[in-house]
Image (cartoon, rainbow, N blue to C red; front, side, top):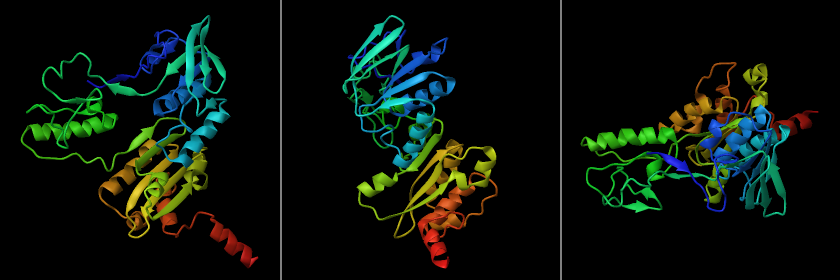
Length: 331
C-alpha cells in the first residue's frame, strides 16, 4: 500500500499554497518562489528541480546540515550547486508558524527569520500507508504505524507477508521489489532471509548523489580503521568532454583486509555508476580486485578504478599532497 506524506499538525497543509510532495506534482504553473520545509532527500530533490526551472527557493532544515545521512563531502557539492542557483538555506532552524497570505505563504522561523513565498512544500518524510486497512483488527502486529515483520518478511499472522514502505524498513522502490521477491518465494515454501547490507540509494539532485554501504563518517564513528580513495570528475577526460566536472568518487575500504565498506559518488550519472560498486560489494570484491578491473577510456566508470587505486595509495592520474611534495623536492 506504499506510503503517504507526513503531515505535521503544526503545519496547515491546504493543498493549494501549502503542499506535500504528492500535491506539488499536480501544480499547473511554476511558482516564482518556493519555501521547502525539510532538507532531506525529498526536499532537496524538489529544491533542485525548482531552482533549475527558475523558482527562487528557500530550504529550512532543523538539523545542522542538509541530507544528514549522506557523505558530507558529497553534500557540500550539492550545497555549492544550490548556492550557484541562488538557493537560500537555513539549517538548525524550524518553522514556528506557517500561514497562507495574499499571494502565497509566510513562515516564521526559530532563528527569528521570516520567509515569504508563493508556495510552500512540506517535505518532512513519509509514513506507512496503513490507516483504514483493518490490520490490527485482523490480528497483525503493528509498531509506530508500520507492519511488523521478521527477517523472512512474515507478519504475526500465519501465511501473511508484508513488504515495501508498509513495513518502514528502507523506503525505496527497489528495496520493495527485492522484498517482494523474497516474500513470494517464502510464501511458496522457501526460507530466505532479507539482507540489507548492500543497498544502493540515489538522491536525484543536480548533481546526483549515489551511495552504497557506509559513509566515511559512519565508519569513523564506529572506530573502523579505514582507507579512503577519492577521484575528482575534473580529472576525468570524459567528464571534461561532457562539460560536467563537478563531483567526486569516494571509495572507503577496511584498512586491514581491503574489504569494501562503502562508496559515494556525487556528480553526473552517479545513479548509473553506483551499480558497478553495488555489484562488487555484493560479490565481496576487495578494493584491490576492484582496482585491477580494466575500465574503458575515456569513460566515467574508470573513475571508480582510479578511486580504488587511490585507496591503495597507487593513484597515477591524481595529484596528491605526496606527489606535490616529491615534485617540490626535485625542483
